[in-house]
Structures are given as structure tokens and as C-alpha cells.
Image (cartoon, rainbow, N blue to C red):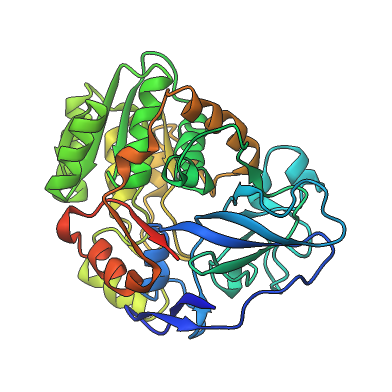
Length: 381
């Protein structure tokens, strides 16, 4: 089969690889009909999260079930399914407490010396599960993970695909941060996650939603799509202080949808190459200046392992709550599907490009370089 593979830093190639097979009785195989490039995939693209050459990437897939293990009862051949990016069993303590992103089943993340969950297409560190930017994909835990799109639901792939990651990540970020009626909310980053986070913040009753980004067309997209105030990002100090002033003492909630690959200082660039720094601290520095005392900062953008000069004291001395992590997806999918079918949200708003799988290398470059006003790319195998 053909699949999108990592071949080196900024080197993504579509290659012929071995097609997946049923390995365990509760596995399923899907023929991927739509998949997408995520901002988190850029961490792999840039080499920030290391993996082997030839690794199949991608964690936002959906498709048609073509084969099932003998123990699978939830789905059948021909079912149309969306696959969450979490690899989760549905039975462990974390899964049964709506914390599926930290599933502790040994098949979720068997990588030695780790204490976190597994994710599709996100390197050996996170379980070594080949991703969904491919013609076919093996999905374990077939009685739990697939979300079946009812045959009666006349919705295109583009309307439900983002239930795999973008929608639950944005929605959970707002829920986890505790946004409530009357709050002022600053969203750092206006990519796909940031755009949907802004929308969900309004839905939770926020009084003000302010979008921050360094790319003009993304701010314009935020204005058109979500009616938010916008602030161009300049640097952590100036932008953070301006947001603090704009919100009369700081925002109630700051949600970081940027993460480790934000704008880096020369020192951060050098330290990241030496593996002594996990990436940029720009968004975190902006957040600590923008949030009010006793406010909350939600870190949704992906971060690396180690960070020098983390402004811990600045958070501590102002009683700021820091929340982090990967969204637990499966339990949120039914609610999000209802929002889509009841026309409360329209996920297709974030799509800018739909291209064949074979054009993935060009699409990655365009997405990373913000070319052609790229917001979200769907790949069609």
C-alpha cells in the first residue's frame, strides 16, 4: 500500500509499505477514505520528536472497515468509522474514568521506561502504532476505539473527520481549563485547534475571546469565523504585557495552542539541537504575563521533555493554575457528533486544502510555511 513516511527532517515521502494485517482478535483494518495533517505532525516533520526513517505518520483518520478480528462485535465490514488519535483499551482504570489518553493497557504503549499513553502515528515513543496517512490502517481495540457513523447520517467525511483530534482536543482544552460564563479567554495560536478552541470558548459562555497569532491570514480567519478580538504576536514580553493591559489585569484563562515549535530564540534553537531544551518557551512566557492572578493556563500545544528558564516562580507567586496534556478523545466523540448533526458547529470551516495522498510532501511544506493561506489539509488516499 502507499503511505506517508518520515524520511528525515523536512523530508516526508509517500512510499510503498507493507499493508497492515490482523494481529489480535480485537483488531480491525480500515480502508482510509480521509485523513489530515495535524500541527502536531509538524513536530515529527521538523525532527523535534525523533523517529526512524520510514515510519508511517498521521493520527486523524477515518474510513471503511474491511476486516475484523474474530472477537470484534462493535463494528462489521462496511461500517464507516472515525478513529480517535488515542490508542485506548476501554477497560483499564484510566479509560473507565474518561482519561483515555493515558490508557495503561500494555498494548497501548509498550515502549520501555514510559509512563504515558499511546497515540497513532506518533513515533515509537508513543507506542509505535503506524499512522493513518495511508491507504489502510490497523486499529487495535476494535470493540472500543472506532466511532461508527450511522448509515442514516448523511454527513460527508469532511464534517466528521476532525472528531479524531481537532474537535475533541479543542473542546477538552476549554472544558479542562474551566472556562465559564463571563470569562475573558486568550487563545494563543489560530491554527485549526486554536480556531475551534475560540468557538468552544464562546459556547461555554466566555464574555471575551482574544486570538493571538503571528500570521496575518490566520488572525483574519479567526475574525471571520469566530468574531474574536485579534492581537498580532510580536514577542512574549510585549504581547503578554499588552494582553494583560487589554484584559484589565489579565485574562481569566489563557489556552496555549502553539507548543514547542513556536518562535524560538537563538539560544533555544541551539539548546534544542543539543537536546538540552524541548523547544520554544515563547507561548508559556506570553501566557504567564497575560493571565490574571488566580487565573488558569491550559497548555494544549505539544511540548518536549526539558525546559531551561521555565518561569515557574512567575506562576507560583501569582497563584496561577497550570493544566496540561493530551485530550482523552473517545468519550467526547458522541457529544461532538451530536453538535455536528444538530448544526451547532461546522468543522468544514477550518479546511483550506483537499489533496490526494500522493501530494502529502508538498502539502506538508505548504502547511509548515503558511503558504497559500493554508489552514487545514485533508489527504485523500
